[in-house]
Image (cartoon, rainbow, N blue to C red; front, side, top):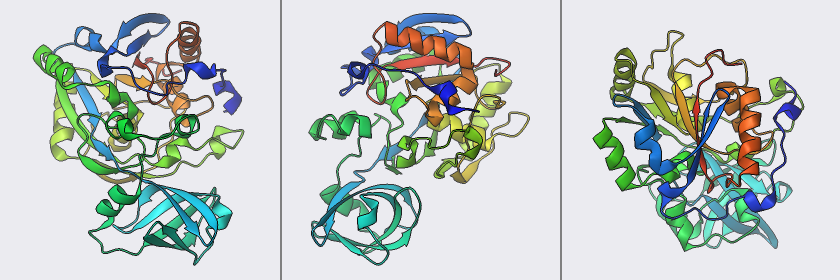
Length: 346
């Protein structure tokens, strides 16, 4: 498909640079076919039914952006995929300053470039003991805010909490599963009291999620892989909910991509552990989910393609036009939407 089909114009002032407070006071656009309604995230207990299940991605964002030097050259890297404890694939900027065999000094934390890839990707081997990486990142790294925020303001202390879900548990992401940023402990308790089930999966979101689609045809785009895991317990719960007539509601595109990677053709979710590079575009037949809670995505992005596949291209274009006209806040710190799958996926 031509990526121009997924383009739209967003006023710069609608890019959210900070989240609202409290988190669940964010607006939420309801999209079900041609029907569009306004709500707030705090309304979620009234919108879901007893027996439904929310699927959360419990990955935890690490401070995976580092700034260092090779000689006099300044280099910024963003970690995006763990190879081993101390070997990571990264995106380097400017990449031409990070050549094979170079050693980059991140203010006392050193790493050698051991492989050179495409689109600014490098593989770094950090000069550390295997169990020292987490502490080194906490000391030398900063939260890897998306480029559209980092270009407009500096990362600060508030982002350490703001760019993390309240249920984050497993270290490894370098981009937040942003749909989950809207949840508070109080909202979770209200949902639990309503009889909504909770399921947790892990997908370590990589910085590749922010890379632009550089090809004109979606068939030519290659996704970066990300590591994910679904336990036997979670798979059993999801299948039981489906058998009992409940709806599987994915909190975020990351949870959805992992569920679809683990689903059989009959819609059964299997346990999963490994990499996924699933790329969902219109025409894809969804097997594992019924609804998706997600923020508003960038034009021509793989995530806007995904939501268009789920809720319909015409429907999502109308929804985004409505959101822009009615002042919704976009992207990672922005407002939310709740999308019902279009049954013919067209």
